[in-house]
Image 1 (tube, protein in one colour):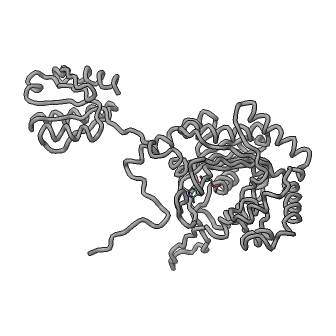
Image 2 (image 1 turned 90 degrees about the vertical axis):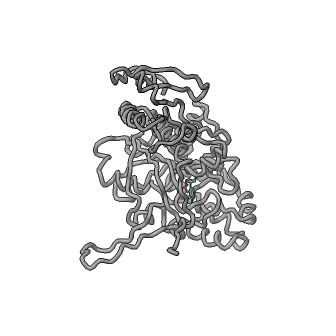
Image 3 (image 1 turned 180 degrees about the vertical axis):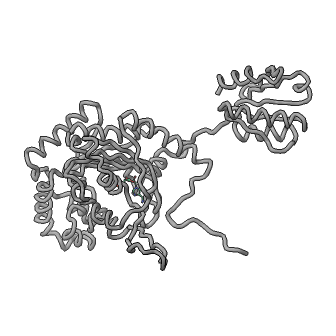
Length: 432
Ligand code: AMP
């Protein structure tokens, strides 16, 4: 027996009964992003490994443990130097790379972009944590992006997307890291405060203490959590300007009625964040409860060889959103009309009509071989047809079709005299 293959661990098939839900999510995201003035960008699924290492930081968990690298096949004819490539673990770095490479900053002072697509991380799979998952995200870049009301807009859009998708039970947490200098002060303060308890931290946090002390703040280990809980975190590391910036962000959120919780422990794991950071958690999700997260990254564009301009973005996890929506969330898939032919001559007529209806944009289908009325009706039900067109000997003789409403069972005759389909198409278009 030839080997049967199965899914790679941590990936999932999105089967035809689930794709209507995915398509409806994608449609709402496209609509809402367009309402907010964002344009879609599509970048490759893989990039140079170094791009992610430089942007996310050599010490981030993603870069240290989760990068899925691609090994290009060696070819003797291939004269190009071998470059290490990695499947994108997130999309911010790719969008910034594209922004810089295409000199978009020379064309406009504010660029508002969004994306939907798969991301890849070599994590240990569990519920809500996959190796290939999907994100919806936005990135706003440009000299015109350094304003607190843009932070408010970006947060409002992330909340707006979740609400438009039908989510109710989620919490928005916000914090600020300030400028690079503020961050430096904060990290110094944290090191001093944690130094006395260093030996009580988990082994991971002991190494985080050296390489990325902020990560100690979101460690899930009980003893670390207890130590972190007792730290005095009051934003005293912020400069007056950074404090003022954050005040304006909070004020803007209140102004447009967006509820939030202040969380001084929220730091995000990546090096590139500055100023506002935020995270949205779902209350029904268990241990993997982050629906999405984002923040400002004012130094990244410069660090990736572009101009010194500010930027901000977020990413939401689509699989987590679907989990949070729960089992009940299915999108009804249906067709406008199913054609039923009673005999071979009617079959020819029905097949011609099927193609005319489809050319007129009417979602229609039929069986590809003659079978009993009962069996064709079963197929119509399976496809959730709203209407059925029946063509048989009587219909051919009278040059009409019988139109049956599948909801209430009512039937009527619609004329097709001299092959004039207009009346039928008009009725079907009005109903679809
Ligand atoms: P991050 O870039 O880690 O902040 O991720 C942003 C969002 O993407 C998270 O809040 C999750 O909703 C989602 N996400 C991140 N990693 C995974 C994963 N391995 N599996 C499923 N969803 C993920």
